[in-house]
Image 1 (spheres, rainbow, N blue to C red):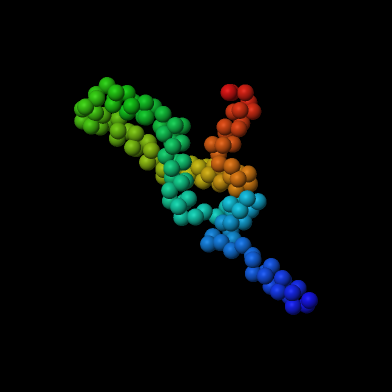
Image 2: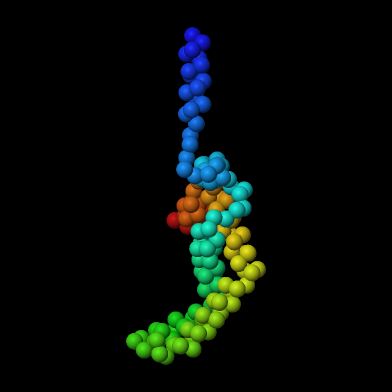
Length: 140
């Protein structure tokens, strides 16, 4: 009888769930990582946060430049490469200015960390949470 109990204890210990991910990335309530972890992976630092910087700078910071370039492209059709150089240059300069702004980068990083934390806490992607909020709000 003691041997059976001993074997059960050993098998219980050996059935711990092991994953390829580090415990930092597989912890949390849904196994998606610790919601309070503020460390960044390389892909987050080099790709995902710059993507947010690019999107926000286009939508919030460089609106006149984006509109001018878009209008120029609509007006020139085939010759836009030649005729819209000035607007393209202004747009690139504006985007580069915001990419180099450390405060804006940190804002975007904080935004990303909040989104990631909420995903890890709820287990739902941002689009699903936004959709549920719209449904609850009566938009549909």
